[in-house]
Length: 414
Figure: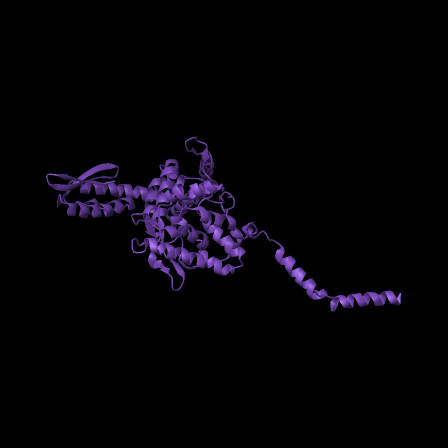
């Protein structure tokens, strides 16, 4: 990471290039404005160094080292172009791809690279990584232990995330440098079903009755809209339309920063039920005009979900003697309640931000019995109605009379 320093009233840049420490003086005097200007230049310079397109002489034309450093760069580029290491290629790949990703995904990618992939493959040439290396690495991930007691291990989902990123990098490398892709016929590990454990309707009422009063509108909205945590925490008043009774989901709050929704399909309009309408009207009297966010802290800043979970969510469940579940289960609860109420599945999918009803039925339909406790009753009602229509509800006329007469005639003839 380059740094800005001052010497004799002039700013100079201290950075690393070609594994060498470089210090170059500029013509800029040491002022706050010039430091800000130089910081932007350095940001661009570091990006070019990472991508391998940095020209030393362009930035420092009067430097005595310019010709020497460019010559070294040319030799290194020729070597890298033929035989890059995993670290060298992954840095280039990341710089090219990060423009496509949300800040939160960039952060996750960096964590996986720095914690798992670079320590294992960083110094190896990409073309030299073979399938046995990948399988051995995957097996080693299952043995990773962490936590204070050292008893926690990586989940199957986490191992798959790490391996998927590795596959993406090797796939691009094999395409560019024309070597056989080593990641062949390596399938993702089988994962357990998604962690879906919705609340029953009676549990929902119990929570809303006992949760701290100033958070009742927040959890009412969560339980009856199916909004994701990032969506409700980033919800702003200009996305609330009381006349149309709609909530517009057009952004999400991730790690304290507003950004786009999880997917393009997540941008949607959610219909307000009467309960949600009333809850948001109550909230309006508290935060409207004081903050752009619907739900915020006393300073008008958006809620920090970890803090809310620690101070409000977990203590409320403990008080009521309910099994601990993530607050995200409120989203799953909304889906199962809508299904149990007989709402149109396509409408539910739109409310949830799903592109189709496939996930709705695959994930949520098995939980509807936990809400209604009436599985099979529809068939019972159909059979009962059919029988009553056939036999008559109050007398032996109609079909029942015909059956009785037929039996009498048969007995008489015998």
